[in-house]
Image (cartoon, rainbow, N blue to C red; front, side):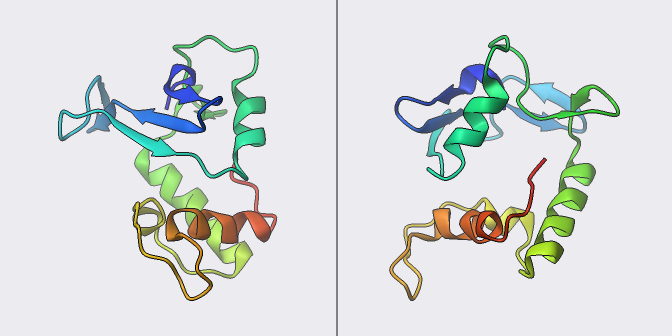
Amino acid sequence: MKIKDFNFKEGILLVQRTFSAGVLIERTKTKKEKYRLINPELLPMLRRLCYNRFPDEFVFINPRTKRPYCDKTLNNIWKEACKVAGVGIELYHATIITRRRNEKGVDNRYYRAGRLLSGRVPFI
């Protein structure tokens, strides 16, 4: 995700590129741009991360490599966050957008990340 992909006023993220074998491809695998709602609990953190940065910068940068995180590193960070929060959600499943509601009537697309947030688990 790059800074320019976020629309904080509307609370949405534009998904328009992907990494394939470590190479940035300026389109998605389906060749379609997708808009995704941003969890409202994440908006303040994302605003802080994007503040005073250039639009073409990546939001999440590995401090060791100074490059965007690779898949393996992201999965390791996610697993550790889940362990600390006491939940067992694979990263792939946590990013699935679903319209189903859980037993509490909460839309799952927010619920999954929200469980980690409520456990005060740092994402970065």
